[in-house]
Length: 184
Image (cartoon, rainbow, N blue to C red; front, side):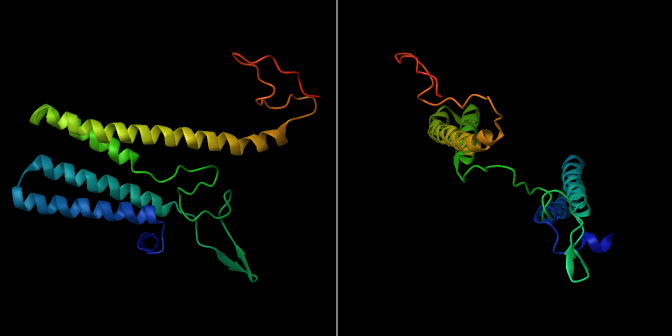
């Protein structure tokens, strides 16, 4: 078990949480000897223990390495074909990279500090909040549209005999549009 925990080739998520756990414990010990304050030391120690436990769990639950057997690689992993990390998921579309969540967080933080330092920070926080919210929501809308567009061919393959075709602009009637004739 110790050899498996110290393995440097483990999943990046597990290494990250183990590092954060060790950092929290070391910082808690340093904080205690510098301040002798119990509450901060307990909180830093709890942070380190929590992150360390999560890192250990991720490290120990990772699938075993491939085993050589008769010149063939045999994987003990079922499902995703030998996923490298516990969080690997190839089942769908991932959103594109964006700074919108950071801008929303900055806007909210500036808005909340306006309570202490004055309303000028609220005015300064509105700009990143509005830009981030607009960018994030339009990006989410575009991703949803792309996901639906990617999913339409797969739904068409699942239709059985006698099922109606998916609605298109030519088969949907709307305001100001006459009802379209059904397809044959």
